[in-house]
Figure 1 (cartoon, rainbow over the protein chains, first blue to last red):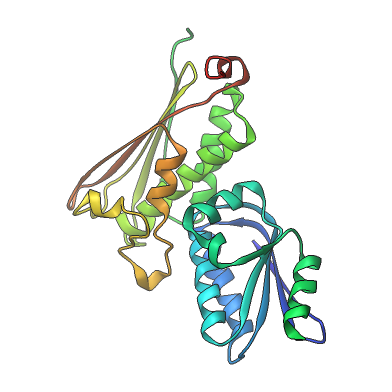
Figure 2 (spheres, each protein chain N blue to C red):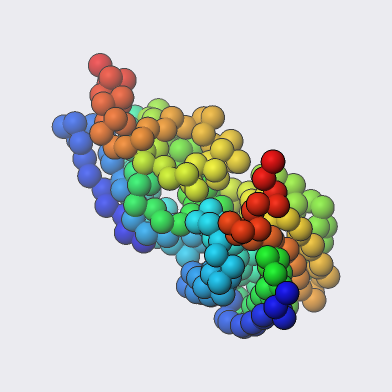
Length: 118
Length: 150
């Protein structure tokens, strides 16, 4: 699994794009990578781009929920972009789609987060 | 009806084998002509069960996971077994959002996902002996799907 982190909108938005299969095997590395980016930062606006995720299971849900809590606890906001039908089913089952805002792609997520920043 | 087709594999309880196990089972059931959604469900079940054996059964230590898959008609039977610590109370672990390892940032959704993606799920577990999950799933291929359409 590849994790690519980009800063958008003058660095105020953090966009993390995941590519590959998000299972228990990949979860630890993804968690470490994202937490390193979040380390010591407050009010982070994080877009988790899942459009490149080809497989996900409950371990992936754990990683997403964990990052959501972390960002929320430090006054920030995390949203999810580019969810496939298969992943959407899992998010719905876990109730995550009720608490995390979701956008069809990164661009719409960036626009929405910029609005929040105003 | 064709005779049953079956396969079995055993592999080390290592997280890198989660992908191997789910892809192996997916490849085996491919002749049933599953939809993409069904194939994803099969892969997810395998992934959840194997992950449970690694994390909970063997506590991320050495062990072997045994997997058997049988196809009979449009019915897939899958058994995933470990000889790990076993589950004290099966009813508790089947509850949604329950996790025995909150330290690992688990979602507690494994059993809920497995149950909703299969037609039958049996859990057989004994302390210090291990855990055996048996799944039955019908692959509703286009020709058999006609039976279910209204």
